[in-house]
Each structure stands twice: as C-alpha cells, then as structure tokens.
Length: 95
Image 1 (spheres, rainbow, N blue to C red):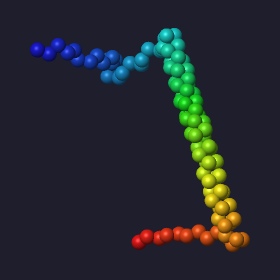
Image 2 (image 1 turned 180 degrees about the vertical axis):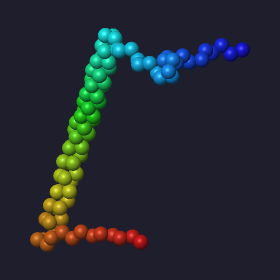
Image 3 (image 1 turned 120 degrees about the vertical axis):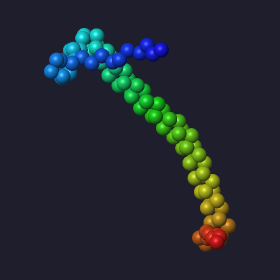
Image 4 (image 1 turned 180 degrees about the horizontal axis):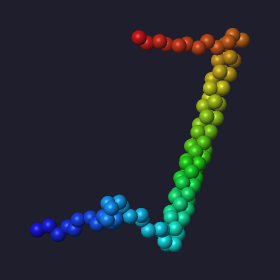
C-alpha cells in the first residue's frame, strides 16, 4: 500500500500560482552567511594554490641551479681541452 501524499500546489481559483512569501530575517541572514562562507572558501583555495606554487619554486630553483652548474662545468671542460676550438655538439637522429 502506498502512503505518499501528492504535492500541494498553491494556486488561485483562476489557475495562477500564488506569489511566494517574502523572505524572513532568518532567510536573509542565512543568505549573507552563505555568501561569506563561499568567499572564505574561495580565498582559502587561492591560498592553497599559492602555497603549492611556492613549494614548486622552492624545489625547482635548486634543481635549475644545479643543472646550470653541471652544464657550465661541462662546457668549460670542453673549451679547456679543445685548445681554443669551440665545442662541437653532436645530434644523433634515429629513424
């Protein structure tokens, strides 16, 4: 046996829907709290992304400096052992 009740439609005798009641003070306060909570959540998300960017930079800058030092050392060694000739770079192309 089904015990569901049909939905209640608030209509005028002419068949038009009635206007909803104006929002109460509690509805307005909850709407304002919702907007503030969404703004705080968005700001927290921006701070999280900024912190990820700082962590990535903190990791990548030392790697970049180390790679630059290694490449510079290799170029310096090639120029030192090349007796004044510029270093030659070899590109291997595989089919």
